[in-house]
Amino acid sequence: MKANFSQHPSTHPSIDEMLHFPIRDKRFPVLFIGHGSPMNAIEDNEFTAYWNRLGRILDKPEAVLVVSAHWLTRGTTKVTAMTAPKTIHDFGGFPEALYEVQYPALGSPELAIETQKIIKGTAIELDHDWGLDHGAWSVVKHIYPEADIPIIQLSIDYGKPAAYHYKLAGELMELRRRGVLIIGSGNMVHNLRIMDWRHLNSDNYGFDWAKESNELFKAKILSKSHNDLINYQQLGAAVQLAIPTPDHYFPLIYVLALQLANEEVEIFNDKYVAGSLSMTSLKIG
Image (cartoon, rainbow, N blue to C red; front, side, top):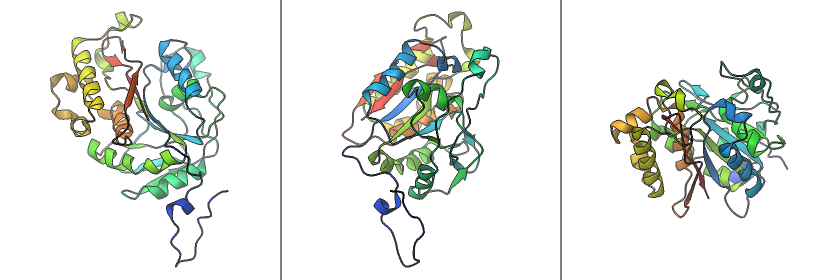
C-alpha cells in the first residue's frame, strides 16, 4: 500500500507511516562497486561475472538507489524521480555497440519522495531530467539483467567535502531496513591521466603507488577507520595520486557511512587495470 503524504496540519506521521516499502527482517546489504571502463557494460569478464553473481546471491530488493561518480551537482543534491529513466551514454570514443545499449528499468517516484523526506540535513530536489548514467546502468545491468528492479540515482554535491557526504549518507540507513539496495559506483584508485594503455589488457597491472593506496584503503576499511578515509587528503603522496579528484572516491564514502558497528566487509574484484585504476569493490552486510 502506498503512503499517503497528505496530512492534517496537527498530525505528525511516524517514519513507518511515511515510507512506502515495508520493514524487512534484516537490513539489506550495501555495495561499493569499482565500475571501471564503460566497456564493462557489454563485456563478459571476471569483474562483470561477480556483478552477475551478486544478482544471484542477494535477496531481491524492492528497489536500487545508486550514488554514481558520474552525476555531480553543485550547491544541491538531487534524486531522480521519473517513472522511466533514460539510459545516458555519457562517454565518447567507444564502439557503436556500447551506444546501442538501453537499460529499460523503471524509476521509482515513491522511493525518490521517501529519500527526500528521510534526509533532514539538507534539502533534496526531485529531478526529472537526468536518468541513469553509465556509473549506474553499466553495473546494474549485470546484477539485474532483466531490468525488473526499479532504480533511482542520488547526485553528489561536488562542492562539499567528504565529511558532508558521510553525514548525509548515514541518513539513508532507514532504506536498508526497507529492502533498498544502495550502491556506490566509482573507483578507489582512479587516475585516468596517467594510465598505461599498453597494459590495458594485462592482468592485474598496477603502479606501485596505486597498490600502496589500494592496500591502505583496504586496511582502513577493514579496521573501520572511517575518519581516516574521510580525511583522505592526509593519507600521503600515493593517495594524492590515487585521488586526483574525489568524484570516483566519494561513492565509497556513502557506502562506508551505512556500515553498522557489527557488520563485516567482503572485498571482491580486487585488481588493477592499466596501472592507475583499481576495481576493488565491497559488500557490507
